[in-house]
Length: 191
Image (cartoon, rainbow, N blue to C red; front, side, top):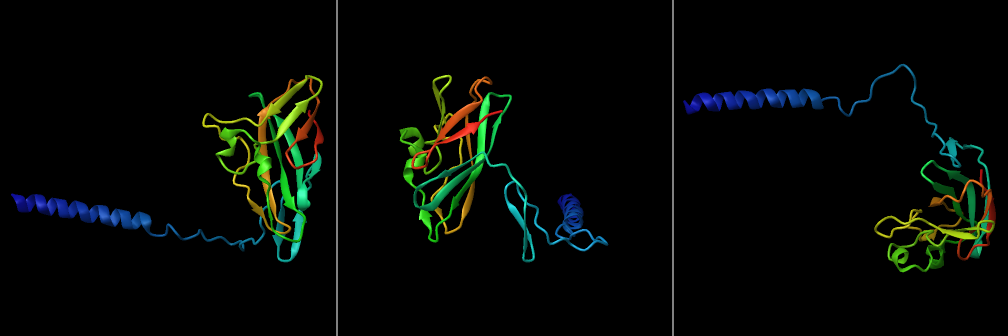
C-alpha cells in the first residue's frame, strides 16, 4: 500500500515539474515583431532624451530660478494645488560649477525631527504675505519631510530632480515667497 502512495506522489511531482517547466520556458524571451527595436529614450518631464549624439529637450515652464552658494541653482518648474489641500513644488537642483559640491546641511532646516532623517529640502518654506502665514514642508507621522531626501553631493554639471509638498494656501492667495536656506528667495505665482 505504501508503494501505491509513493507512485501517486512521484507521478504528481512529475506532472507539477513538467507544468512549471512549461510555464517557465520562454519567460525571458521577448516577443518577435517585424519592427526593429527603437533606441530612443523617452524624455521625462523637464529632462532630455538622447538618440545617438543628438539631444532633444522637452520644453518646461520655469516659475523661478534660485541661486545658492558655490554655483548651485534650484529651478522650480511647477507649483500644483491638488484636491486634498496640498501644494506640490517640483524642480531641478543643478551644480553649475566645475567641481563636485556637497549640498549644505542648512537646506534641511533646523527642526530636530527633520534633521534626524538626513539631508533633504525640509527647510523650505512658503511665505504668504497677504494672509500673514508661513507654510513649512509637510511631515509624515514619523517626522520625515515630504520632500526629496538623500541629497548629499552633486557632481560638476550634475542635476537632481526634486519635489516639496506644503499645505496649500487659500485659493485667494495667488503669490507666495519661496525660501530655502542658503538660496535667495523667489516669488511664485500660484494658479
